[in-house]
Figure 1 (tube, rainbow, N blue to C red):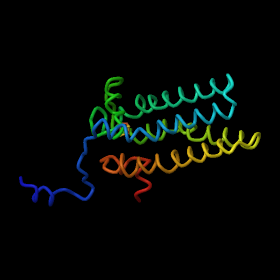
Figure 2 (figure 1 turned 180 degrees about the vertical axis):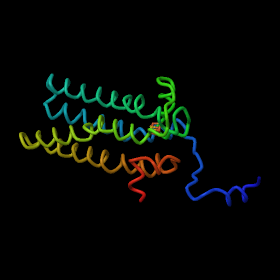
Figure 3 (figure 1 turned 90 degrees about the vertical axis):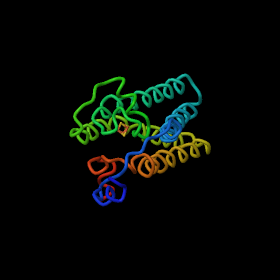
Length: 182
Ligand code: SF4
């Protein structure tokens, strides 16, 4: 069948699957890495580089890593992109090495259940930074908090929606993309 015939048969919801290179996967992960780094720096500097600052920033970094693996282990096995190079951030391929494939029909349920586990990562540095600013104002903490907010609340979701999730065949059932499209 030639391409013209295929194009006539394909419905409007059809989106060709795209395969991502390792560099594209790195770009997709970059805002999350920057968020974890900036969050740790805010905690470290806000606590005056004390032992408590190192402990708090260390715990935050560990939380960021565990959060990524939480999604890989508990959400990705239910995803359409599990085990493929079509997962924009590469998690789907890691998931394949850790857990067997699960029922794709339960993706939305698992997404809604497990995403809240990582949500505090977005708010801990903002709340802690706000407290540091109130207690002892340093302009560089304010700058770091603003940079953290721009990266985490604007760049990360924008990159995710426009770059990572834009071609996903699962977007109609995904709580992240679905509601925004309607
Ligand atoms: S697209 Fe999202 S849910 Fe699917 S495998 Fe990749 S990271 Fe996991």
